[in-house]
Amino acid sequence: MQPEYERPIVTVDIVLMTIVEGALAVALLERDNAPFQGVPALIGGYVHTDEDEDAEAAVRRILKAKAGLEGLFFEQLRSFAGRDRDPRGWSVSIAYFALVPPSLLSGGTGKTLLLRPASAPGELPFDHERIVLAARERLRGKGAYSTIAACLLPKVFTMSELQGTYETVLGETLDQSAFRRKMKDLDLLEEVEGEKRQTLIARRPTTLYRLKAAPSVFDRRI
Amino acid sequence: MQPEYERPIVTVDIVLMTIVEGALAVALLERDNAPFQGVPALIGGYVHTDEDEDAEAAVRRILKAKAGLEGLFFEQLRSFAGRDRDPRGWSVSIAYFALVPPSLLSGGTGKTLLLRPASAPGELPFDHERIVLAARERLRGKGAYSTIAACLLPKVFTMSELQGTYETVLGETLDQSAFRRKMKDLDLLEEVEGEKRQTLIARRPTTLYRLKAAPSVFDRRI
DNA sequence: CGGAACAATTTGCAAATAGCAATTTGCAAA
DNA sequence: TTTGCAAATTGCTATTTGCAAATTGTTCCG
Image 1 (tube, protein in one colour):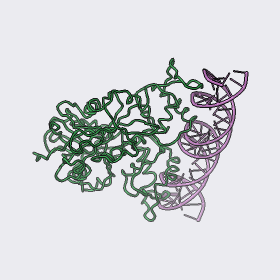
Image 2 (cartoon, chains in turn yellow, blue, purple, cyan):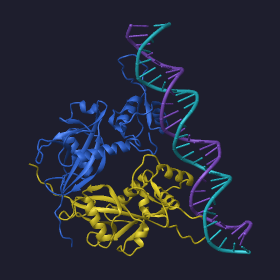
Image 3 (cartoon, rainbow over the protein chains, first blue to last red):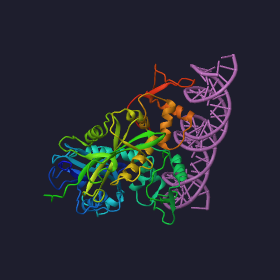
Image 4 (cartoon, protein in one colour):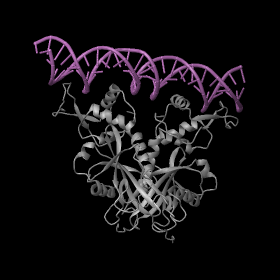
């Protein structure tokens, strides 16, 4: 028989990212409780073993309850676990990162999320700065090989918007013709008929696109 | 004040992989305790909050104690967390994958590890089959963009051995000249002078290489 | 009604890569 | 010497990128 060890605290923390003024931003929330009560931190909370079927369920519950958001793209980042990351004791944070289009945040549904530049979120409690860093690296690394960047846009978007999103995710500018060629070759997008974007000034009308399928990875670089 | 929720069980599980007869193999160990006592399962165990500084420390302790192995390459895979994966209750498994060269296993240091084909490890307890699957995908995905494949070889190896390892990791054959060119371009290897490999039959002597640095990622495909 | 403005899209190559196949090289057994 | 064999290199073609210049589709202006 195993001796019993003290069970760690288990929380879920979400690096919710969006784009603000052409740059990645993280959403923070002031903490309701001690420790660090009132301090902006990642959106997160205890796993509720009685109501959460699994960690993803906890993420959905927390995003809904604390940020008023549903249906977002999210995926597990990794876990951060150790004795010293939380003053309450040995703890595990199962970290997720989630993406939300700015348009969804501007709608009044959300709570008062603080948006901070992802590259400089300020001083954060626990090891949240490290978690944000890991999320940025993940997004950057995955950006070039998947369509997750599109999760930062509304369902329908223009090719330029998509390219711009990839550029802010990757942190580098991309060649326009190469980008379009590749997108065409990969055959991940489909044109959306009908509704054209209203333009203030006269210019050639944009064709609108949407992802053919849920976010997916491919093996050549964008 | 938060209500207290029952704390989940937290374990660490390690998908220890090696190469056997040109194919990836997972190392399993018969479980010492209930549940599933005596059944082969991933190498793992409870996090010991009193002695483990963090999850990596638990991994090192467990690899040492249960498999007699030290100094291996390992990295976190992801966590598997939920109510139904373990009959003891809501649980979190922080899963790691580790690589070991076959040469280290043949040495008598290790305990009696069962080596099963990674692609068909047989029926495993808990959600260990899923964890193995995730590890295979991770290794495969990362194989083409990093030098981790070299962790399945001794410190010094030939170009052919390295290519062979990449091939079993990636599950595809690679062009020899392209492989060597790329390896040369990436400048990750350095030649090892002196000791040439003994050959049974006469053939051109191989130059031996070793990694210049710890396993690292690069951004173009092998 | 013929520009003018301007982003959206295409085209056209040159440069860099990747994929294949054939050739050359070094060593020791026969 | 000759021969066998894998190591290592070359050559060449087919793709993929990277850049820059050229078209297009619209509406506003004069």
